[in-house]
Image 1 (cartoon, helix red, strand yellow):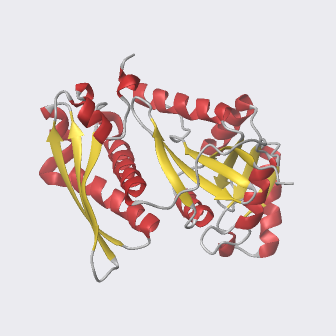
Image 2 (cartoon, rainbow, N blue to C red; image 1 turned 120 degrees about the vertical axis):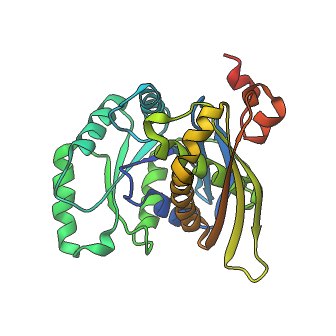
Length: 303
């Protein structure tokens, strides 16, 4: 008799630099089956799919959970909080510490509202003594009633198999959402475009132009390997936005580029030569071709 498989959604949350992308790379490895963009008006949630004999885990990326400073911030927080209610299990990634700041306490409050199973993942265990980990577990246990607590090292893969098992524990039985597939350059292009877009939004902070998209013009690995050349264009709707994105003497564009390059290099595990341009296309959201090109669906704008 064929083994019943599980299939469901998980999301990874946590403050910046706790190692979310390192953990994702470690969990997925070469098992990225597909990445699809679930359009939001201002940001996509990347879906990365992990498939194995047990079934399938679809990881949703959420905008950061933080106290909103502006309208767009409020929107992103709402998207994040809605995602927390939509998924089957939440992975909250933290660093090994006995200090719990206001940011973590705010996340804990949101989790209580969501009522979704939560696995606390204490990352970077390779940086501390084994006996200290129990102290960290105890500290976090007082903050929230976690369903599971799993210490891991995303960097060297310690205990990540256990984490996968614990995720499956909370997923429902059912058919897979996606076919098993191989890594193609198209999904990789989508991820790269989304990373650049995310960094642009983050760097621009309160001056964020709403209508920005990223087009990957070229993505080519050099014959001798080790370096990937990427040419990308940030598309905006107004000339004034172009000025903001480029910044004084190109400083903002440089900042966006270096932040994106760092993430892309970590994801691709190779050196990246990233060149960014900025173009104004006043009506790109009304162009079926451009919308499709940027990974959106026209009907998402027919509100």
